[in-house]
Image 1 (spheres, helix red, strand yellow):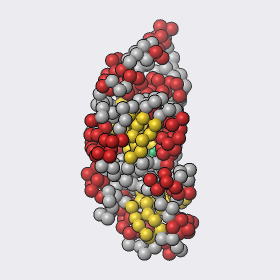
Image 2 (tube, helix red, strand yellow; image 1 turned 135 degrees about the vertical axis):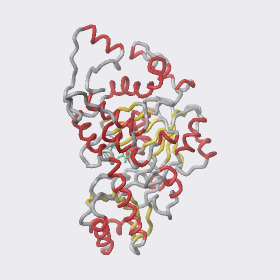
Image 3 (spheres, helix red, strand yellow; image 1 turned 30 degrees about the vertical axis):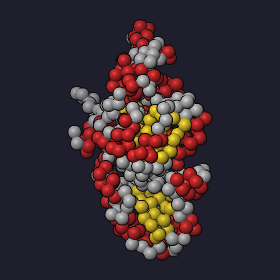
Image 4 (cartoon, helix red, strand yellow; image 1 turned 30 degrees about the horizontal axis):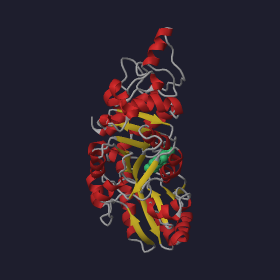
Length: 420
Ligand SMILES: *Cc1c(COP(=O)(O)O)cnc(C)c1O
């Protein structure tokens, strides 16, 4: 199926006289005929449903759809993008391990990696997204278990050279985890370029309508966990009567361990109703992404020609340092444009407060145009050095271009720039 078709049909195929639309299975629990049947699913929880802390039919249909969209073999939804990031890392890193991440990442991920995971005894080694091969190779330690990056980084819009990062991760026998939130599978499928695990904040374009917070982990099913670095996957799990995930579930080892162990122990599974809403967003994802990209490119061109604007960063512009990488990896450059208004922080604030159509809200990738000032919001907790390393300038505005008519969007930008 092409992606437009999969967005509508993957994950749920109604049989004779069943509902056309995925039903909402609003139930915490599932009924069994006998005590023995219950015992059997505790031996192998992939056999039937047990409890909605880690599996639910509505959510599972959406998981299958997302796996199809990303070209993975299976997926697991989570209650937020943050939970997806946390579980993707914790599934293979424990106390005393390290992993490598690009420094150009979402502010919340930066906090999680720099502080909270450190308290778990897990070290994050940061490298620049533009680091050369040798610099990247030198960053590895014997205890390094993964490499992490964002396809198109929030908010700095650096494009990850997925094939190069995957190659060097694989040379070191560790997987590449890619956060593909900004392009969505409609514009990039990291697995096609060698990524092993793909995660999303589904709160963004996948939902698209600013309705519910969620996340997902997709497993490509292609990574070989048997090289000796991942005993959590290959050795017996005492919390599951001694099974080895790789022996029992082979290609599904990573994603089933995440569900059977981490989701069981931490919770963090979305409600059926949230998954139902997410599915509505997914149905139109490819169509929406085309228009988001077209509108964003027009807005970026307009901003680039304004004398009130210091600089514009949008990988779809020929002037962008990431233009070539964007052409290689993205069908189009998605809907987010960042730019620096002249006059630094004061200029940015004056511009934002003068907008009428675009709203100020702590969100991005919405069907409605919205703006945010990263330095005083999402990146507020970072030190100046971290902010500089992640590429956030005090005058930077993050513009998330919506699906309004482009003339109305540009008229709003034009008026607000006049006020600067
Ligand atoms: C928003 C975002 C997250 C966090 O997702 P939540 O759903 O808000 O928890 C992670 N990565 C990226 C790139 C994001 O934009």
